[in-house]
Length: 287
Image 1 (cartoon, rainbow, N blue to C red):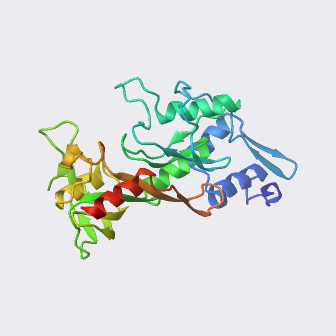
Image 2 (cartoon, helix red, strand yellow; image 1 turned 180 degrees about the vertical axis):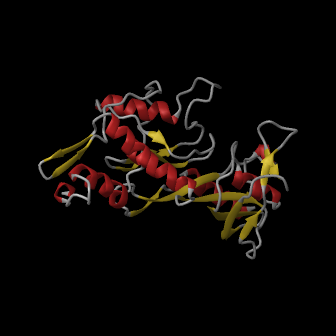
Image 3 (cartoon, rainbow, N blue to C red; image 1 turned 45 degrees about the horizontal axis):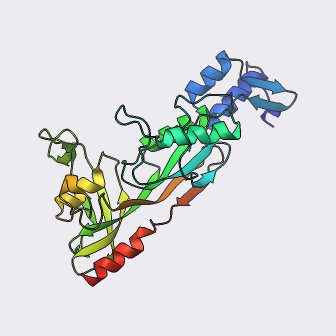
């Protein structure tokens, strides 16, 4: 009940509340200015009311998926949803198939909830795994800032070609654009710093199962780094992988770790491995 806060010296109760919002709640200055301008901060007796949940309509057309979305975590501030293989996170002007953004918009439309979540990070079209959304402006500003500070942890698992040395723990190589191919990235001395941590989980006669933790979040980082190390992902034709067993890269987001924007609680959200990986691993063990 911050309405009981004593007024600051030379100020009033409202000024004390603004100081509490900034110092204790960690309300971003941009949002505080917006709330003040829109009369979204109210003192009702001893209680403080913030207009953090204004009705909002998604910018994306609601398009329902063939199968219901798998919700991995949800509360009033955050949503984590499983992104299947072959689904883009949001429209990019290419193709007309529903994206995850369209499907999330459809979910809230069907619920009759005026909520328009915004994604905090992306996954490649053919990478499956959890995608984190902010359900209001407060959560979006806090989570975007956490993302910029590299405080949102992302762990992946991948099936790669060749037996990775157990001594390979870190790939620290800068990544830049490939001037010979618009869609590709490559290791380049003039590129942006990129760090991938590698853990060998299983070794097969001619392949490996690895767990990968991102120290940075460059486009195609895992795919570029593993290919550069001589172990392209199975199915990743763009970076030298064979498509005999899988028509797309064998890469899955295993878990997502983040601090809740309101409570400060550390949350870890897991996403089970793709069901077809059991069959793939059996095939790789026989080769």
